[in-house]
Image (cartoon, rainbow, N blue to C red; front, side, top):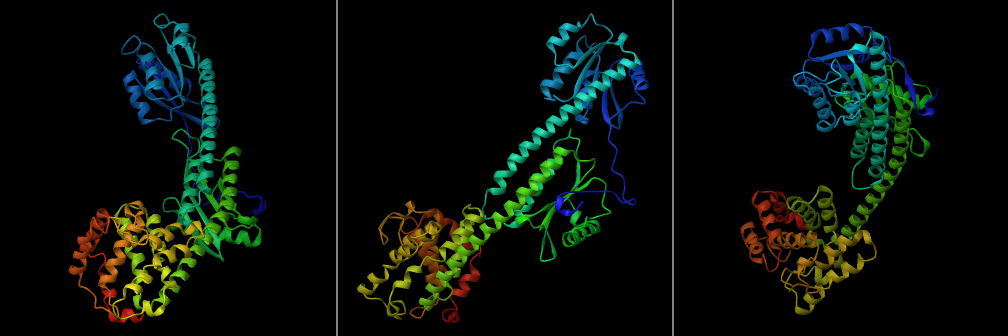
Length: 515
């Protein structure tokens, strides 16, 4: 079987330990020790589907509930009716079905006093799976009853597993195609979580994943994107990875791996670039394998889409960087003002509760706050003295120029809002539109503060930098009139905590203006 078949069933090396053997758990609830002993004796050699019985005993309904909490994967319960009370067994049935919502366990009423709990009444009013008189339960009939119950339990579990598997697969699809600012590492971690979910669905599942990993092969080097536990730290992981890399290059199969190990290649554009590797404790069935193959196929397509999205996001970032460089080149008197504004903005956005992605987007967009200065004459931009009223009026056109430059692409909407409105005021007396700034996005109100503060503490050809207390007092004075009071409060918190010290030191340096 070649690697192009999309799966490999790998036999265990003789040196590898065997997977643990599973049992069917049978709960025997009866207040008579002899009945429990006879049950054990009658079923001592019982096996079904290559699994033996594990006996769990309880002498009362109360003790049975304790055992059920300790063993939520009990498959079948043989329950006496009359124990600590005349209807203790029936109350136990109600608790299992209604209080614990356990619909998988098979419940068999086994009574020595059928008159106390008539068969037809019990079957009609209680959610049980069988009713037996102890006098009729010979060894053969007990064997048949338990085997039928276990088969029903197994089939119900399979249906439940397939249902949950389909639900999880449906959950995967929107997550895989919900393109966002997540990294490839986050993408693969999310996919691994879903794959492990397919193989370890519930405490009553037949499948129990020990270890799993998702990895990609890039330029011949391993690039682990997600793993469970400490698997990637083991020598065995490196052996698995090396075998898979060789398999990609030679078209052969990895060998000498654990029994039932399952590998599915991830093949974007039909080229193997990675794999999903899991180790279930027992063989995966055909449905499980099909679901995991489908997941891997979707991962390959999504990886293509995600890379395209990341490429587009990077192109957007490069476009902003180029425009910012043009604006910075045009106005060399501001030095690294643009980079500092981006840093101030991102820190302040995080402090105000924005997500990392939102804060980063605000910081990137803030780099274009003065892009409109491209349209301002050099003699005004570089004038060492005070501007005349006419020159000031010309200078104040740069927000509209910036808004016009950035107004042709929806991806630039936030950058345009910042460029157009960062000189608007909280009280509506700013420019160019004279609109109260509370109507603008948070990023605009953040940039309006940090732009003023950085200008105050910066060394410029026409002024010396202000000291921090003086600049701080100016920001405080503008709270509620020029600036958003909530943003001012957050800004002062970061300022007083020393979060801006490095940027303030850079801004005040004379060398900075020649950068």
